[in-house]
Amino acid sequence: MLLIHCPYCGPRPELEFRYGGEAHIVRAEDPSQKSDAEWADFLYFRTNPRGLHVERWRHVHGCARFFNAVRDTTSDFILTTYRIGEPKPDLEALAAKRGAQ
Figure 1 (cartoon, helix red, strand yellow):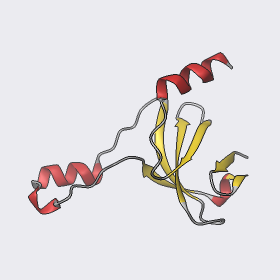
Figure 2: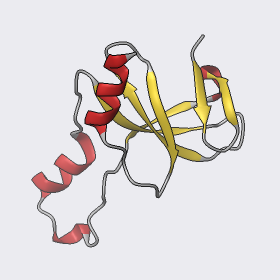
Figure 3: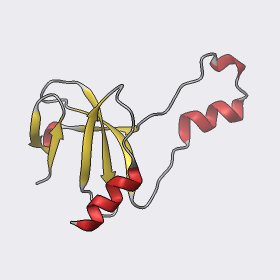
């Protein structure tokens, strides 16, 4: 079983969490000014990288708070978690640190 470190509650089993999509997606201030194609792109298209991916998670069976995580999609290993509102970590530095371990 995978342990996920909730930045509010500490390490917990993966069954307590739900995936919330890609992190750091900014919604348009006035969506009515977007074309249908631009709005559809915002709603339905996300990156799907092989490697490090910044994601939003929710601790549904704990504090119920959202947080962000950097997960390696090739191994499901979560490199770090951080609170909503904190800046996105340097992915290159995380990858280099992971490679050195």
